Image (cartoon, rainbow, N blue to C red; front, side, top):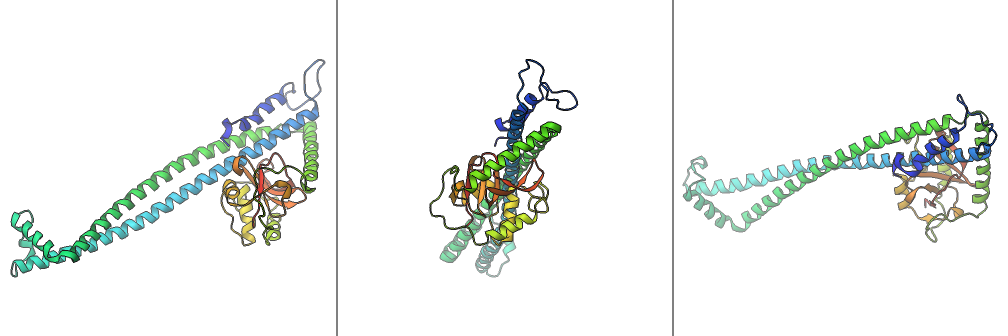
Length: 356
């Protein structure tokens, strides 16, 4: 998804403008004037349902983008913390080795000075430099190794500082992207709400009838072993995970919970948050965004989906994910219904994957 500037993002607005053409101020009055080129009530309802489904995919996709950006920021921040701890360890190692080198040097100088004090040496003088050279020759292998350790420790310190700086830059960049993603999500949400606000009266009944018609068709298509495959899929992926029934029961236990990106894994949920949470209740970890779930799990044709499998929307499954419960039905977090709902497979999913 590319956000509100994309074709899908603009679809609700274009359809809304078309649907409002000829409507009376103060609500929809769908009676046509003579000769007016207006769509039938059923056609308008179908167009609105298309727009609602498109906005569902759009908002879910934007929420997934936000989730991915937040995960990258959190990972970068963890890298910063780890690098800072390693920097401190590297500093201590540099200090330890330096102290050993200085102690060996001081011991040799004391011997050269026949009891003199190290403070009496002038390290800038030629004589003292020669003594340092004598020291290096005398200590040879042992102190060469110490000096090599010191060099390695200093290089490690520089590397850790560079890694920390890069991680901080990455975290800052993700913070900027998160702010942009949130603004984009809020704008799309407002656009979706403006669309939903127009579904009133006679048109609302027609939209509901269209939704029911689509649900009946989807149940017939996907529950009878037919229907499209939905993208590439793995062969012989094995049966669904034995805890699928527990995951479905968990998802059903939160039907009606609100849709939200924060919090996203209870008490409110977004699409991937719901799926992750439901499977966690069954003891299975499939955390991540919808796109990462689709990338990491074995693919199956939608027509072969079994209860507990996941259904995906958008390029590479990046826009939306739902938990399949059988009979052509899914449980998912819907932005347009602002809740976790159980409904028929809707729209144009791109594929399915199995939690094995």
